[in-house]
Length: 206
Image 1 (cartoon, rainbow, N blue to C red):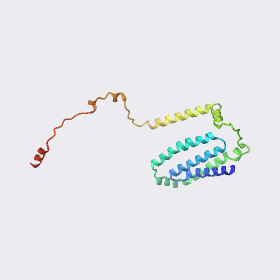
Image 2 (cartoon, rainbow, N blue to C red):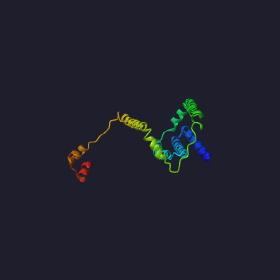
Image 3 (tube, rainbow, N blue to C red):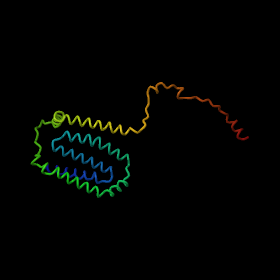
Image 4 (tube, rainbow, N blue to C red):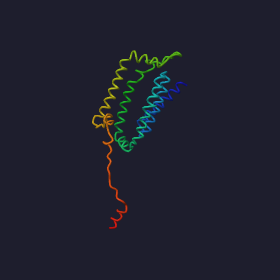
């Protein structure tokens, strides 16, 4: 029964992953990506990686993909140019996909990731905490790669914001100047003479 459920989720994951790159409608592609994330989380539950599964659902599905879906729906991308580009570079895409498939088979083949090299996960006792084990590895053995990756991501975010705002003229406001403003600086009262309606009618008739 467990094998049947695993192969069912694996088939759904492969199908939705293919639909993400095949479907021409960006909204449908985003929805297929959401389903693939859910399926990946279910497979991680089989591997007793509960923390990673919940993180995948909460972070990617609950935040990133929902935001991406709203952005795609608000942009209202025209499908005609996308279809023209798809047909134009179809043969190039087939060649690239073939090369990637050969590389993935060579790297992820049975000789490198088979059951003899990577056996089935060991069953853990009842009080085993996946989050505790992951935190212990992350903040002891892999603490330096973790901190370096955090610094690299921070630098990338700052660089992206700097490049975006480099050529734009930003309008800034000084709160001190706003507080010093008086009524006479903003409002000017103008007195105008008002003519009576009878005099205007007489001038028109004459």
